[in-house]
Length: 427
Ligand code: AMP
Ligand code: GLY
Image (tube, rainbow, N blue to C red):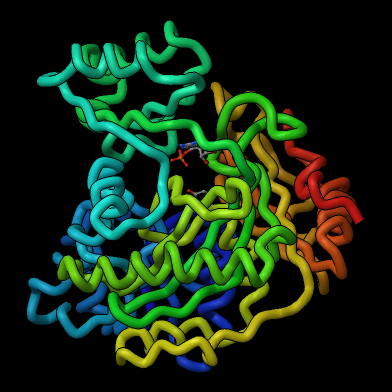
């Protein structure tokens, strides 16, 4: 079949590689893609939010499967756009309807959903302009740290963990009164801070049945030992040592199953990935956030570990035939180390020549492009997160060491990365 993949990051490079290996893939296009995805299909220069152009392209090229990488087009209703056009409505779309994508697109919706279905999550309250003063009192009476979340999509910047009351009040005012977070911050979820270890769990669902993909853990902070500001993700590992059978059973019973059942009960049309951002607190799982897509950089370790044919899983989803037997995984560990532009997640420069990137790929290693561009046969940096170097290993440390060794021969000016991905799991 002809397949169109939307997105341009490391996640999409990993998806493109996996999809291109499928027995069902005749022709793969990626919009807009990056120089990495171009190794596995044809990049086309269409933005992920230009639904008219995407729809016209799908008609012209007889696309049968649309895989949506990032959240924006889903929250903006690309699924609904396809289903409302008679010529596009037969295309299998991997990604939920706009109603389903609210699980990521609205933190307030997600919290309400969890409350309605008794899914464990941090206690919270919701505030807007209309109950601003009540919010101020709430903050004053709450323990610290406290978490403030802009309701809408805020490109990963909408969550503030305030350590002091002053910071909490300042952020609260910035979000609601001063619109510093745009429309996304007009409604704010204020929730209790949970202390524990985080992991990412992924389901592929048709809104009733589901299968679980390998779990992963991402490293969000810029600095060694999980310090400094949050980023899009500096690395990831899979499997996650503390996600043992006992814990995963709880995740399935207390989180995954009630979520899928809730989606069905609320009549949300949902054919795609559910990303459960979880925290393990004293052995129990709590949901920190839902996303309506795969994670980045988690995909760069999950896809390599998935040995099943991914397109076959998408077809099973479309036919209502998802079942756990379909998932086969590589038992080895995988780790990815993200190469970022110096200064990221603050200001950084672009346009630096990259050397040695593709050459880093080998039998154990895959060099995924993220923010790169190609000009006259050379690669240049084109974003904060530039590439993700994934390796397999007998252990997490071995996988990380292999990636770090490969990174020694990759260069660009002001390249930065974390050398301690997987640091909590020595040996
Ligand atoms: P997000 O931008 O939604 O991915 O959230 C960023 C990060 O904030 C999460 O990965 C957690 O590390 C942290 N976080 C969010 N909510 C909480 C919470 N209730 N307790 C502790 N940490 C949190
Ligand atoms: N790695 C976290 C995310 O994709 O949101």
